Amino acid sequence: MLLRTSLLNSNIIKKLSTQSLYLQPYCVSKFEQPTFDFKRLKAREGWLTPEPEDPDVFVVREGLGEDSELNWTINGYQITPVDKAYRNLHRRGLSMLLPGTLNESKANVVDLGNVNNQSLNVSTQAKKDLPKNITEITKKNFQEKLRNIRYNLSFEPSNLFVSDGAIGSHYSGEVNCRVISDDPVSAMTLNHLLNRVPLVEAKDFKHEFTFIISTTLAENFIGIDLDDRTIISSGPIKPSVIQTALRNLFSSHFEESDVSLLPFDAIVSNNKTTLVFNENGNPTQHNDLYAASDCVLTPNGVGRAWSGQITNSQVQTQRGDLIAKCNSTQETVTSVSNSVGNIAPNPSSVIFVLNDASLPPVSTVTSSQASKIFNRHINQVSSQSVSKFTTLLDKTPAFVINGSDQAKVPKYIDQASSNKVKKALDKKKFSK
Image 1 (cartoon, rainbow, N blue to C red):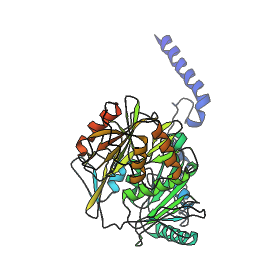
Image 2 (cartoon, one colour):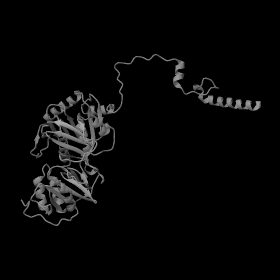
Image 3 (cartoon, helix red, strand yellow):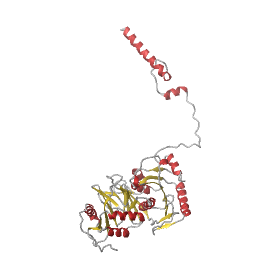
């Protein structure tokens, strides 16, 4: 018994001695178990008195809204963030920063007050025929407005929001853009509208368009520099104005290419794409809605310009949606579900929804009639887009729907897209 105990003790001592060869720096003696309490070991050597902090050294605490790399990226636009700066902040965070209330469906309701109707001002050195509702300004005037906006964003104590995304859902017809604003309403609008892009660092995001918004300035102004692909805005701004400014710059960007932006909704059902123009200006409320307000015609098919929609009509909202009230009206910003992908098939039919009670519920029209309807009701489309659309009408069936009762429009669209309509519109209609 004594021999067995002696052998056991000798084995334990031998084992501890072997371990201590590798763990000696952390052992008190070779017979002790090793300790990894570095704080206690340091205390044995004695603590040194810490030196006082340098008052000229600032410690940057990284976190949501406090990203030094993002701040330096914003500084590259000659804008210095005064408060927090967010990049592509999620809707839950934007909802917390938005003023206003929540409705029954948890959508954000914001009152913008009285917002003046903003007309677009365009600066360009190229000779272009601008639409009647657009005013041309000099490059010097545009740069002066830009300096005021940069100065205001750099000294007004407000959060900055950077929204990076794309107009267009497919690589064959998309443009990356960056929007810097001091307004959570604008950031929430762009969160719904812009298509998602691959996640990269802020300094590495390549973009063709830049949009700078300062809502705290008293002057109400919005301008586009077609040469530098830059948009600036001062004063309160409505969601629809943001969309209109980006739409105009996008159209100008692809003016000399085989890509066209058309003010049509796209409805995709049974792998067939139907283009729908609604005269009342609101997106068509259809279960198979793929693209709202604008669609992008590309050589590969039909893409959607926006991932959301802005409408003045009553629509069902959900958590994260935005309802902006201004001038006794309201604009609802929601997302559009996408079960198709980044690109849809080429159009198989074209439909015009007109507010004319004298029209039959749904009827076919000739390509000549469809062209006249297009030229009569659709403005701000480049001549090249008109030419492409006219070529499309020559090989695509076209229909006209009586839109006086919007509740019946989805049913009529299904009838037309399935080619079940045989009644032709009177040839005298839209003959001039």
